[in-house]
Length: 389
Ligand SMILES: [Zn+2]
Image (tube, rainbow, N blue to C red; front, top):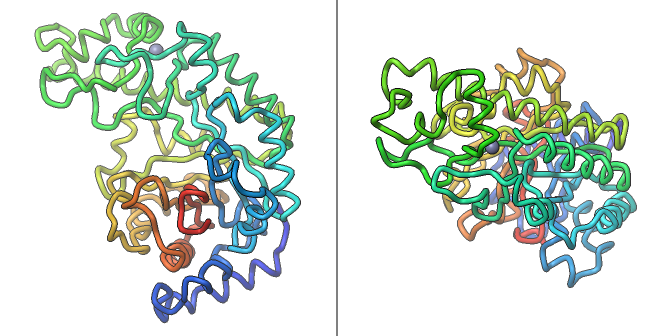
């Protein structure tokens, strides 16, 4: 996306001094909502520039003119908008195309943002594809609806839908956001007390794991008296195989989605989020949620890797914009060693809860810190529930 190179070089240049003199206090709210955002302009902007998530399913968008919203987003310094699709029936391919066209008209590059394996419509239409969680729930957790990527029929149906949407909307990129298993923290809350939303232990997963290990996954994860119980020292290697098995499933699933996205729109850039647990328990998301940073970077070869801030960070009302430095220390050099050309994007949740709402000044300072710490560009969730609207 080699657009606006000169303008963006200017953006990156002027914002760094703002940080040095205290960006948060130096800008008024009005200045902050109309000033450009810092980013590394060497890739030319577009999908590699400041990025904001937009969920067409949110009420705000039904009540306000879309062209005005797109213009405001561009004016605030964003060069890309991630349009969220989670299979909600109202967010059809036609709706997504309308949003993508409106963004393009405002000089904002549209990106399709998905949350695999969440797909509300498939979840409703195909109960047999739902995940089974340790507490017995059928794949529903918070707003997510989890279908099982160890069920080939589901993977095919999901990929077909992604392919169609990419083709219809002509998206310049796709972001695989939070392609993982629930749930943070591992199979048990305490020894003998299973974590209810830990998934998946459906028949397909159990059968597949039994084939490669001989063990019963449900007994392994929940039964203290079982010969397979995962906390027994002699079962450390077995549990490690389970973790690898979950990682492998996520890798294969992501690979299938990426291929589908490229079938829909050849040349589309690929972006993936990694739940960056730098300030909580570094690299624990591999064990807990089956996401392996090294394998994602090396094997999936995304153009962009987004280090998603963890909820333990964004739920702090007093979080400082320079918290991104901890993420850089933990991951930046490692990622660049694995893939020197990759664009690393920071991420800040600026609206999910009252505690995560940030002022426009904070958002600008975060962008400055992003560049200062060697990342390509900042990204944020989500426009209509933030202070930017
Ligand atoms: Zn399963």
